[in-house]
Amino acid sequence: MSNFLINSYTSAALEETQYCQSESSEPQPIGNSSWNGGGSRGGVRWITGHEVIGKSVIQCTLYLKKVGSPTGTAYVRVYEQDTNTLKHTFGSIDVSTLTTSQAPYVFDTGEYVPNADDILCCVFTGGDASNYPAGQKDGGSGYPYQYLADYPSESWRTASGQGYKYCVTYTE
View 1 (tube, rainbow, N blue to C red):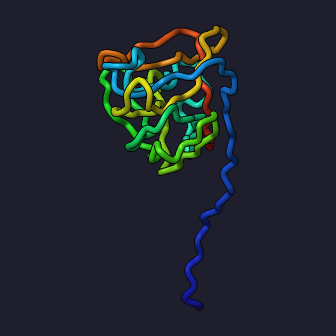
View 2 (tube, rainbow, N blue to C red):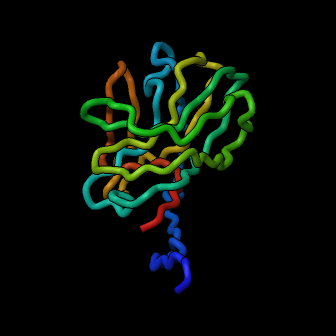
């Protein structure tokens, strides 16, 4: 008789899927709400029926740029809308390193399983009217199961059916 341990565990590679909202028509300033009507956060709120809800999001890409010469750190985070509870941080970026034209920036610190009403957003609390990072939004309509989200006056505001340019990669 041998002393071998037999492990019946089988591993299959997880298939990754990417969801992208690629339309955008204008920049969305992100920064201190004293100069910015949209506030210190900008992003997207997932509502019931969105394909990423309940999936394991392993990476997100936001399309960002800088206006002027902002300094400081921006964070890519997920919040629960009703309680404003921070649920996950995908990463951070030194805003002075952003380019002056829209470009994709990838954030992949850990994984997160979103729930309905979670908000994926870029957070930046500094800047002024001439120096800030900006995401990309589309004020049109036709974006099912998501709302454009921002954070004026330190509370969430969402716009039904409007878009925000981003991608998320998830596994089933």
